[in-house]
Amino acid sequence: MNVGVVQAALAYVAWGLFPLYFHQVAAVSSMEIVLHRTVWSLVFVLLVLAAMRRFGALWPVLRQPRQLMLLLLSALLLSGNWLVYVWAVNHGHVIDASLGYFINPLVYVLLGFAFLHERLRPTQWGAVALAGLGVAWLTWQAGQLPWIALLLAGSFGLYGLMRKTAPLGALEGLAAETLLLAPLAVPALLLWTLHGDSVLAHADASTLGWLLAAGPVTAVPLLLFAAGARRIPLATLGLLQYIGPTLQMAIGIWVFHEPFQAERLAGFLLIWAALALYSLESLWVTRRRVAAQA
Image (cartoon, rainbow, N blue to C red; front, side, top):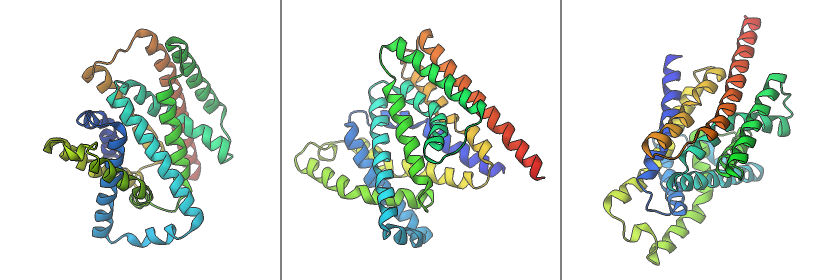
């Protein structure tokens, strides 16, 4: 139990510190960062799978047309999520990005209702309504929808929905997704490099090192998360997930000094109240079920 909590918490801490990593390669275009992340993540996870001798589960799935299409769709959603997030971090929108991951649990609730026919309890509807009020407030204050947060929450929510139906673990799933993206990513990087437009053609050793690190930076938190998720209750995992966006928001405010007016705080408070209501109700329901089973 304690080991699982530590593993899952470390995964969320790593995800929360992502803005610091992407800030190191801020001079590289967002699209190229995503291409590097795809290629070096693939290299890293293939090496890990080879070392662990876990290719067995990967190849049969890739030979099934339906599963292949689901993995391709999840890969496109994942790469789109990466692109929006990297762009947001490197253009001074870390707080907006953190909002997307605060909203994400409630997006899962709505997707479960819409696509998996899951029934929502009244308290869950209340949490969704509170979050909707928060988004409406932020929209009214800014004069536009918080599109970065909504794109991140929506793309990652749909990605989670796709991955829920794929019979692959976190590591094998990332390997399959990056393998499907590689026919686009590798030629694009080669073409940019030959034309002299890619960072590979003229970057210093430090920048190249940070880009190569995208492989382990992407895969290691996933491995920690997968290991921790197997050892702890879902309710505990749900509470730990707020570590990531909280750290991202703190970095945006205190490290990158992004503006955060009191008017925006009111919208965040509504969303945090929604998350508190959702989390506490889920914890209460889980404990009642455990007690009933006992």
